[in-house]
Image (cartoon, rainbow, N blue to C red):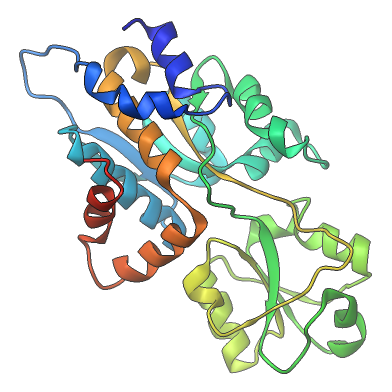
Length: 291
């Protein structure tokens, strides 16, 4: 199978991974090698969701006898790093990444997001089809304090807002809260989602910004209603070095199949299971029929 056929099969560029691709995985043979294969580096930003996704991708590759390893990589420089081949693979958030590349304030239509991102990062980087996992930004508060963003301005006048540093500039984060709801609270920058949750629990913050993928940290909190609709879909996608299709076609198929099978519910469940069971990702790969 040549590179163009493989990319078309995988839906790289946002066309989607067709069901036929899953059935055809066994027809693609690894590139013959006469020496041991170096593990494919998979990047993680060190967050709970980032570590969980890297574990899932690692398990999907292992099921296809594709050696891989996990390496640290900040999200804000992920596209450049993957384009240079270190790492070769990484999960990113589609809309957030597009903002960083274009300084865009308004997202394209959801059905065009992945193709737009793929165009922007080409030719050094390819984008696999989006998973069913949404990392949209949302606001949370302790229970029994406030239930809607429309009430924050009056209910939390003396409050403190906890946000990661990127939330201060993300178009769907603090700027959207201020513009749409008139909320202007003192901010406390806390990068780690678990630490933002702790700040809500101990009362040092009254409102905090999270992603939908922060399922463990959001458990038990009040997710605030958004009547104006500032929440913007931010799908979890995998970007890969453009060299992967030629040098590791079986690995590329394994990654595409894993992302096609991953849902919001499965990802949240895996995050919880991986906290206590390092083999949870491998078990999910087997259950999903990806082995």
